[in-house]
Image (cartoon, rainbow, N blue to C red):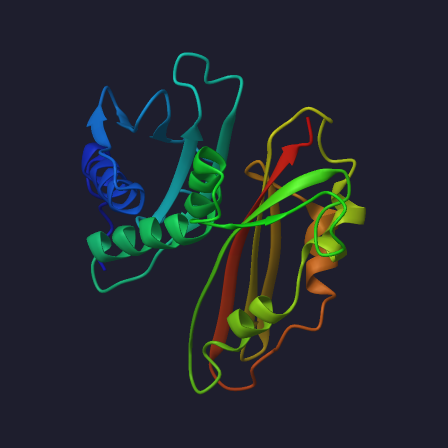
Length: 230
């Protein structure tokens, strides 16, 4: 894979194309943004200094382009492929299947893109309505999908909630990304809250009994949007 990422407008075009297909409504690239219906948009973020990898993207979902400071959900995602374009395309696909699905569900609120957990649901997050995006995975070897299968069968929020409850203000719209897995002697477990690494949440994720393949590797990624109850 070469080291040159496609131009920003090309990357945003990939994002717009995926979102158009998912929503059944047009998104287009204008003014350095992938703009959707109403005031929503996606922009390429600056990240936290780890964006040197050409297949890595920082994507900010802006709910109101006229007031981006009110509600913008930041996330980062990496893809892989034989070429940089393939890696970027894969990164956009992974983002849409996890983070994007939760954010689109926030817009339509009909269960067509992601699942819902009420604040009192034992599988949810106490005091918050949770919109749970999709769970994607990848890996190598016979157990390449082991962590993804585990993540589908085991809810994460009750295990993470005690560590995350003090990580944000009560009236914030909060995005929580979980990325974990590994194999062959190495593993990773990462929680990011609104794009920022959360140490305690990451430790809680690492302590769970998800599979550790002895041959090959297996990873899973998901995203949850925590909505103020009011």
